[in-house]
Length: 511
Image (cartoon, rainbow, N blue to C red; front, side, top):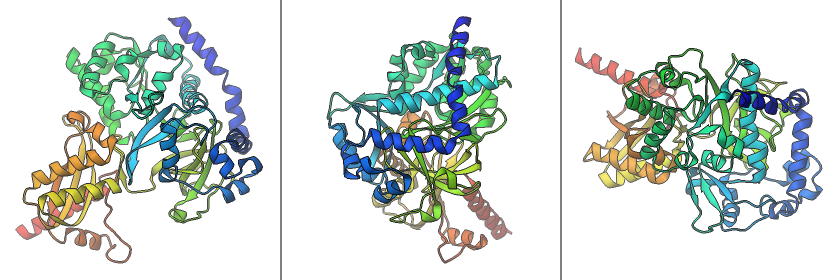
């Protein structure tokens, strides 16, 4: 297969002039993207409503088209899923990426057009490999197989000519033949929706393959590696796949997993690369070998706006174009795309670490959340689940906060809930069970990660003495006013502070 490595090297390097154009003329590239989007969609229902045909510049675009979220687009998307076309984008839309839900829906369904697949998601994947190849000229990554841990998809029961599923499954199903040739396992296994059977079959199907690279979220990658160890009796992935040289990850912060991966893959020459490929579009990738900053990709059919967090929630928020952003400022991302999303708040926040070229770090979400394992749990889900658990256990709560429990060498991860009850439940274990069930009903991503305890264990609920949160806020100097207990955190800082405060108080009382 060495000839494959040479062919892919030649194929990917054809993209270099376009990359250089993007780096040298970022503002012009973005302006061209906006005009192209508007002209392409001017005859759609949405384009006619906002008169795209006569929009000549960004100022008019911002004046006419409001900043939007999923609920604003939901009625359009539901019609598209019924088979209506030319609503948000002119080309036929038959695929929808299923993502975690909002207040009003368990799941979101993001349109995936031909253009968004070819010009955005697939181009992003090819650019990741191009930059890796440029930074590692001796790579033999294409002399073996790429293992992709993706989700599943299914037929839309309301319209048998359309499909929905995880973005990864949508991408795998539509990949060109040459890309299918370079990946493993067989598609029939890769897009299965029964995860315990899927992981078992993936391990058996790939254990004797020459796997040189892995793509997937850390949670399921760890589950697969542990299954391979169980199958082979080994404890080092490099003993199973000696030519493994790259792990491509995204979706959640890799920081909590880094130590665990070093235990699982003891070959220190293995490289780790982060990508930012959301259901709504491929937005960024690591392009430098010794930096974790992501390069904002500007020519994928996406036009970017950046909203200061001080503007979040306003009816007519102020947004900045690329020419106006500053480093170390927190911005909410707003995108207009070749999938038919227009001035859409994607829900993530970023800070630029540099401009010209524009590199950034993902700083969080526009709302409180936990996304340690790809579960994308938001506060609306948590509030509703707490309400249901209280109703079924005759409990009343004063306050609560939740945070992840990360993987260790011997245990899986999960969520830890610290709850101060005004009236404690009759059975705390049953409260936890109802909470877990309600979260599954509210959030399809949480439900998937909790499937048979494979990626996440059941929640750990701890009842705190009355006054605990009051005392914690007082110690932090945040008592009263607008200061509130953070409901969800994607780190353990608050939880550890509260638990340590409780321990200190218990020791003090014991003395």
